[in-house]
Image (tube, rainbow, N blue to C red):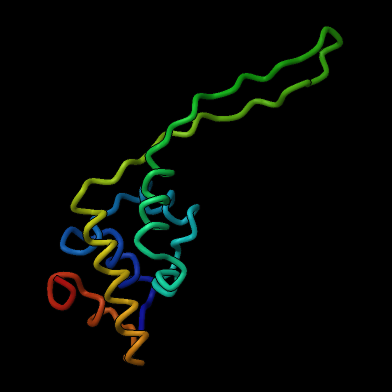
Length: 120
């Protein structure tokens, strides 16, 4: 099964999903944190997540009234983390592989989810 080491390898290794740590964190905010989370996604919901993580938002400065009370709290900028086409392809392929493995009741292992050896 997936350990922390091979789980990180799955997401960040070049032949696998090829994500940066920031891209992975943004996908986690969209709900794709574990391999099992692929069950919660289809092509459209993955595409929507990809769209969400490339969006950037400017910072909002704190606003105070004349008495010095905070009216609007400061909000940090959100830097988008767009994915490359190859990364999207790998993630879509991994979702399909996960769906197949769970449908046929095959264990979802790092070996079975290896992009180069099994999914491509």
